[in-house]
Length: 46
Image (cartoon, rainbow, N blue to C red; front, side, top):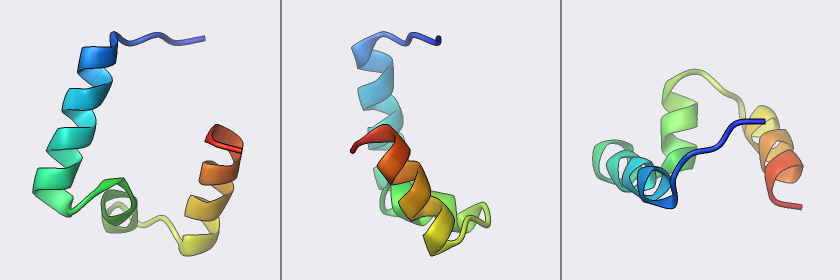
């Protein structure tokens, strides 16, 4: 559905790592629960 150049994705992950300690910590910062994060992970990775 949506496409981003690989460089953009890597830059985004790098930014999240530097600013928040990683993607999971960022998602918690914006209010996602562990259950929601786990569900998102399952949808995207598994």
